[in-house]
Length: 382
Image (cartoon, rainbow, N blue to C red; front, side, top):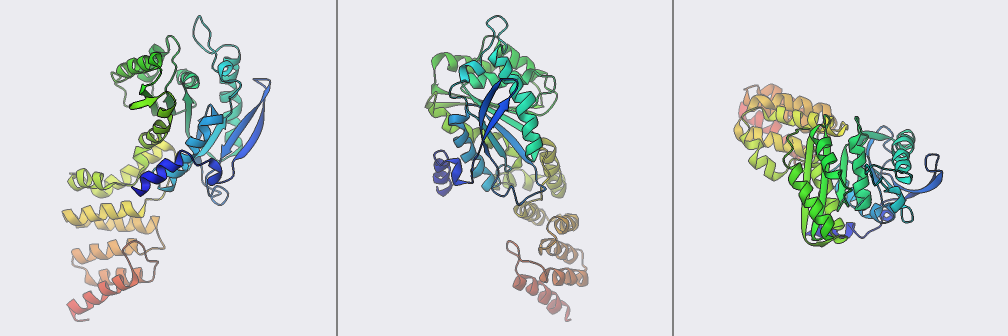
């Protein structure tokens, strides 16, 4: 209940609540105009000088930027997604021209073609050079601009990896072009699309029709998600779709849940330790971000190992915990458990004693480690 209230507030709290928004005027040669940008950096961007961050480009930044920033900050705070750089492009007076396409081939034309080149050839290179951006880049749009973001799908090597389509007002031929692009995608791509039962009828019908076609695509490189929100209009669906899109795109990034622990990890026929290392290797490959293994994920895996009595897996788990969290008791605790189970009490006692000198973490306290040492001494009369 508490998280639900906070999530609701995230939709209406402005970006300035999380940190100062950088307002920039960007002089575009392609557009022969100056464009207004809103840039939100992660909370500890200046302190974490070696850290890189995914980049989220928000079209219709004059009204979409704040709800996207609010949800990104909320999800990243709970480690449900990585901290990210969010950049909004204000289009309150230019969105129609920015989204313009030719009436013959239905591809960007005039100002639409220039806006397309502005994003790919000017804005993204500038952001990559100015800020510590990661490989993962996502773009967000609503109705006309949601249609527009899909033109980036058609490049042989797309510059965006994630597409958040909020009630896209699809151009003619766009459905067939999206299907062809996703069918042939050879790199990891996230494609999210949303409508509502009270959406504009033409838009809703086109989106629902496209959804049926995309579901037929057999391509493991494409992660596709669709929502048709009950009783949601063209505008109210946005507040539901943004957190939903972030949730599904970063599903692999989230901590191991109780559900995954009970339904998957406890019933693994393979190594739980290897499941953990493979999970983090996969998320690094997907999102282009290397990160420490969470303490809670270590605990979930070790609990499964104990439940299934696969004691030999505690040794590599302990060594990995020492590497990932060298200042904490965690690694020595797992090694102590391992030595106890294989009948090496002196090595177990030494591991617990070493852990006693380190920082407490989770359920591990100095008293707990001391009890483990004293119990071994008592059992063996030392």
